[in-house]
Image 1 (cartoon, rainbow, N blue to C red):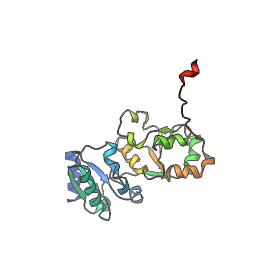
Image 2: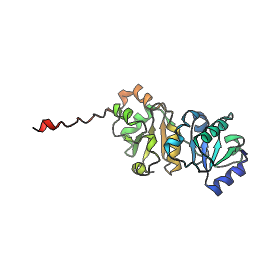
Image 3: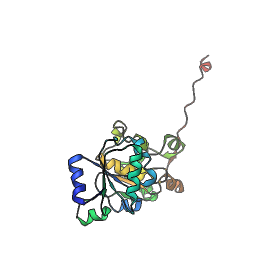
Length: 223
């Protein structure tokens, strides 16, 4: 169902609906409705796995080029049963109505390299899988896989006073992670363009560590 800006806001206020933004990354960087989750079409399959949404959660969609309808069909297939509709006219109609919007800042890998030595509150938040992280990561980075973002205990190390730089494998999941943090009230975050792949290209500017596997203890060694 297509929704006007007024109806869209009504659902937000009365039913505490969650907003799913399905636009591409470039459009999302230009601005988004506060508290939106950014699920690019290729990452929608992670919606259920992340555990951020209940299947009864009221959902609102915003997209472009009719991709919100494709996303809605996929969410319905996953079992989400309380879909209210999509914003008519997309994000442009939100801006035209002079409504408040939010931004995610994207930085280049070399900017991160320059900031690390001089910012005592800088935190590199590595959201890759454990296997990827163990194969190589920036020294002193905090490892929090994206699939653990729904766990309040895992989020306990994050705080608004940190300058958080989000690092995924190739940049694809950056905006989803950033939007989740903002939804949880952690707004002081940036995303590293190109993710870990961009770090590797400038590896001489970073201190890279590898996690060594713990050697299994052989009972015979004690004899």
